[in-house]
Image (cartoon, rainbow, N blue to C red; front, side, top):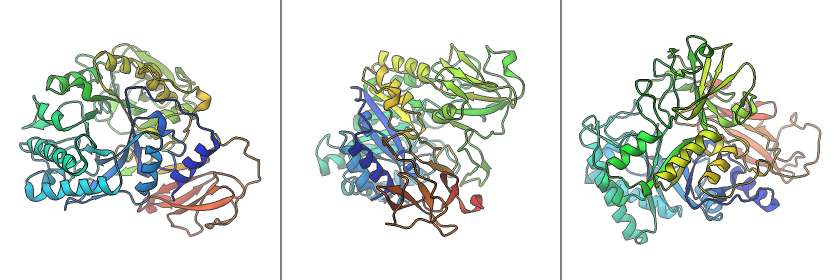
Length: 504
């Protein structure tokens, strides 16, 4: 039994994490497998669906999942909270085989069989197809068929629905898709009719973020409710909904995407001199974001860069924000009435950060409700701070949420597909009441089954370069492993799982 399952069960048994109660709307959370220590303590009952990320489609049509997160216990834990468990296939980095897999029957049939078997074997409630860029490159490793990707994908999804019905019964398993702000491309242009997709798919998770960033010449909002005409990319939360519904996708089958993070870039000048304009010239070099942001080598280009990501958690716990709407000096917070998002600027290093907060998320949910959408999708669960954003979303949809002191998850880390590979694991001091005080025991090595004194203490294994680490639970050390290819590095009261060349 792995760390996430053990601690979730422990916290639940102690009664330290009250349920907030999900709204009637869909509340979709993406659970990153490489972030399982940081997602310890998440209250699955606050969500309607959890998308475990990411399953990897192989060239032969088989589906695999991160070995460091066995699916059986986590699926059981999710479903035990009356929440549906799905696995998301692909993502930014692992969609390079989709074009070939949906091309014809010789590859499509084995792929469909592989998905059906994967869902059946792991008792999943469905599958989330995270091929975000049919008909365009997306990640540099992808080799798209600009003409045929989208029609082939539609045929594949229709056949997958038939296979699900044959195996499990009609309507018994979900098919969902993560999609970008415009419908799938055909011949370099967005599709004008995606209604056939909608007949086979339960709903789409619309990624209404990563719209502006260091790839632009000017600063701009990461996830604007509305774009400003002539400034930045002309996409937004509103335009994305219009684009998909205009192409025949029912609003009732759309979950609106909400980012629990922001993006940093470096402006060329002091933006506080023109505080009403968040579109100002910037460098294309991405700065380091929050304390967990590290350089990440792109597997295609082999170029290492920071992500520039600031998780909401770290905007709060690194004292950039002293409250939901208050910035600490030297940071200056500004609200933009067009994008309906806040932005931060630091005059000392010229860092600009566009992000979402409770106010901006409420505006987005209100708009989604007015358009008859099904609910919200959150990227990502591990980025929140004391459930501030999640509870805001639930309340905005009309559900009940816990008070800030009743939150379930306080630890987080960067996103595999947008963020670097390094992550930290800090001791959870919030979820178990009346913890005794003990002297530090970090100078002695841990071994499976040996006694320990500080609940939730974390230690790397004694062998340098090992992927093993240990968590203290009920006075005994329990062994866990970092994701494949990474090693454990001890950093005071935290550990890092990092690539070997980065940990020296």
